[in-house]
Every structure is written in structure tokens, then in C-alpha cells.
Picture 1: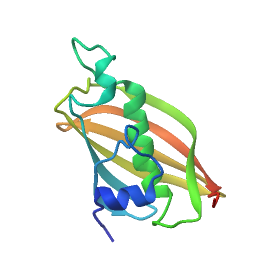
Picture 2: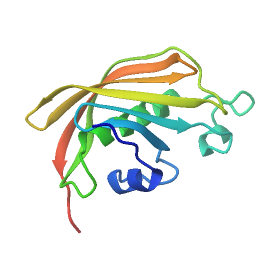
Picture 3: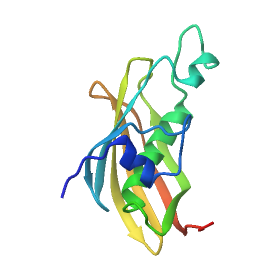
Picture 4: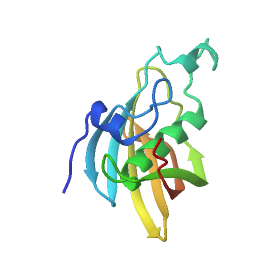
Length: 147
């Protein structure tokens, strides 16, 4: 079953907040299998002030973080889940296109393996149908601390 998620639903599922919440909307979500989400890149992003300010470029590490957050939405389960997905490994990451203000990242993450609390996904971030970045990410599902 495919579902869309709004920013309010995403905020219920991810612990991230401004300026580190890097997912704006989920277009498709097949729980435990696949997800497609977007990140709108604007000149107002705080990192553009210091990362090549004369020629703004989204830092690659933040593209990977956006892919990881999208992955966390597919492996972390529903709102109120008792686990939190923690990034455990980043492998085979490649950057292919520059991401600039005005771009929209379309991030797809697909579960490749799910064994004993470890979930491996393959993620891809595209801008205008061109692959900007791709890689494999592994998450460990840790118990959520209730405070």
C-alpha cells in the first residue's frame, strides 16, 4: 500500500528539527519496502551562507543525511514506534551532479535486507531525473528511550 506523508506526519516519525530536518514530503511509501520523498533546496538554507557562498552548492554530506532521513522513514516504522533507526554504515556513495538552490531532490530508498535489527537500504537522490547522489546505508534499530 502506497501512502503520502505531510511534513507534520514526518515530524512525528523523525526526531530531527530545523535546521536538520531535510525531508519536506513523502510522495510514496510502502512500509518496510520502498519510499520516495522530496527535499526542496532553497537559497535560505543556513549552510549556503558558508558553503561556497559565491556559488552555492549543497554539501554532499547533507545530501547523504537527507537520504539517511528518508531511509529512516522506511525502516523506522509508524509514528509512535518503539525503535529509532540509527545510521550504522555508509557504503558505495557517489556524487554525480551538483545540487544548487532552486533544485528539488527526489530521494528514493529501497530496503535491500532486514535482519536481526539491521536494515540495509539502497538510496538515490535525483535532480531533474539526473542522479545527484547514490549509495547504500545500513541502520541499526535501537530501542527508543522514553524520558
